[in-house]
Image 1 (cartoon, rainbow, N blue to C red):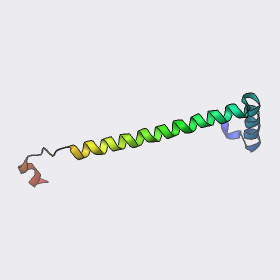
Image 2: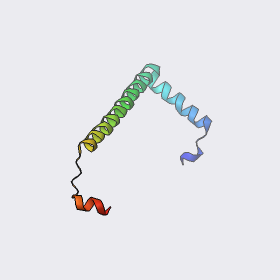
Image 3: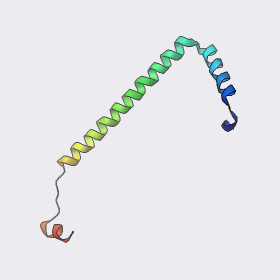
Image 4: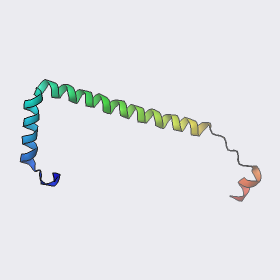
Length: 70
């Protein structure tokens, strides 16, 4: 169903949204979306950093005789 929407259809939808919500409301909404994306990226980076710290702190508990077999 969405495969049939071309450029004119998208422009019509954009105009209708602009008329319904107004320019100020849309710009504030896009600002909030940008803040959400930034917070998401920060959270992902913090999660990666935490995983890397935990991996660095992990100890190898393999017995010495088992290490030689590998």
